[in-house]
Length: 489
Image 1 (cartoon, rainbow, N blue to C red):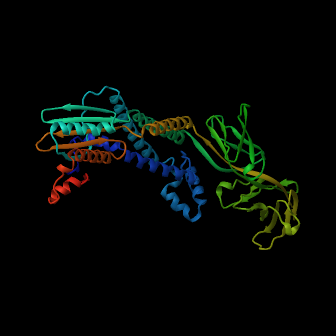
Image 2 (cartoon, one colour):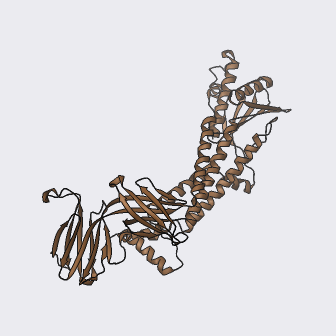
Image 3 (cartoon, rainbow, N blue to C red):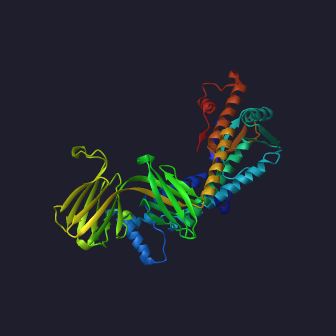
């Protein structure tokens, strides 16, 4: 008995071929992998929002590229700063939506078909892989043996007899067909939520704030996000905010490490917290402007009379300047200086005039200090800062429903074996043997399922024949046919 595997000729219908290709699971996995990679890029690199003003857009792109120094121009050329606004993401979302819509249509069609009673084998689906073998038995014994093999694996088996052939059909895991529908619906909802967040949402990343500072959010009414206070240290730090609108409405929010604050579709996360230095300068009672000097443009505000210098763990040294007086200040944050008898946090302040390498003033500041250089007075005060990220995500409801549908689909899959499986067996009667063709449809490894059925049929025929009917050993060809497993071509 031999078994081979061939693909049945596909229908010469280009629309049908395109449908099967566009709705295939491999295309789904490929598109999902590309989408995950694209979103990962948008999370790693700051995204520049579109602007009708080309000069403003160019300034934003230049500022984003400047944060990466030598790699900035290369990354900008790759488009990593405009991943969320470029055509690539829209094309990817459109293709994935089309693919999932076709898969959902197929799954709903199969779900509707399986609800109808089955009294005869349904037509074969196009594109199924066929496994061929032979049945060395009479017509009645061949039918009975193949039916017994199918019934051992499929709860429902129906048979249709013709003049020269018998057709059998079996299926199992009918409730599991719902798992595919739920998972696909979940993916579509997740896609809708992601598209809504990208097109209508926004994100502000890594914004340093100190007490009583504020950020204007791009929401209706242009509310101010005001940092009231920071309590606790390091990972236990908690920031209290007030969301204030121009009409007098106010909303209190609290965010901590891994504990974002939420107000409707607005999410506020605290990324880190640490020390800060507040600085003012004056000359003969006239305020002077100060400028924070930082390599990262995201942490470099405009010159002002009051600046707050944040010290992150990765950058304990910062600098600021008084441009009008050609003075530059170097500030270093230390947790303690035991050699100086200081066991708590302290700042080392050094002042430089112009390009002179030697400081004109050096001072240790624990809480506050007043520095005098010529006619300039600099007031320093210890402060704290937090680095926050804010995001407006109107698609979170869809994403939540997507998770629920996905979990429900996974539950159905785990309970019913992950997949609705069908099998067709066609037995062409002949003498002294009959030809048997097995085809299967399954979510995973349909050819392997057909091979398993063919091996089970061969084993059943071999057991029914008994040792006396086994082919003689001196016939090598027959011996090879009897023991050969189904082979895939």
